[in-house]
Image (cartoon, rainbow, N blue to C red; front, side, top):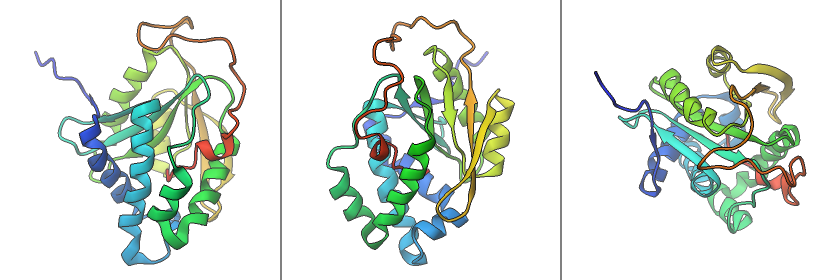
Amino acid sequence: MSTALPVARARWCDIGRVADLVAEALMPTALAAWLVPDAPRRLPVLAAVARIWTEHALLFGDAFLLPDGSAATVWFHRYRPIPTPHRYADRLAAAAGPDEERFRRLGDALAARRPVEPHNNLALLAAPRGGAAEALAGAQHRMDTLSLPTYAHPCAGEQEELLRRLGYTAREAFAAPDGTELRALWRSTPFRAGGNDRWPVRHRGFGRPDRDGRAADRAAR
């Protein structure tokens, strides 16, 4: 009987791989075309911005890869306020160049809908060549052990269907700045709250948005 884990936790050396998967998955979408109108620049810009947020997730969340490196998920543990990425304004300007403001507008739209309840946030699901179901199911199993609900706002209908199969339900639909319809999804934890060995649940300060809340979720999702 195989004991292989369905997903592996990404390490610092995997950041580039995860960012490339995110960029490749976003590349054919209308949202990506709006974020970076210049087609030749689109893929490298998307990868550069995704790298910022993947690095941040390894400090304040988790990222997981399928064992063959073909699909990834990126999560933030929002059981307490988290800061923006280090030197975020400078790094975003360097990564996005003339498209910086579009990424900021998308980030503001996403952050405005983020729940104030403690949760784990699925920020990115990237499976450009398949494997989304396996990557998501494996990562969701890891998240469920943390005894918190999970939240996601996927950009693609296929991703929404996968999330619904795992028990997510719709919270609201809203339009991204480019007009793309996004749907906020929520999954209650299957376990009783009370903490665990790795991420103890902290009740003090729950529900308070962080001071930089508008900027804290400015990711290309």
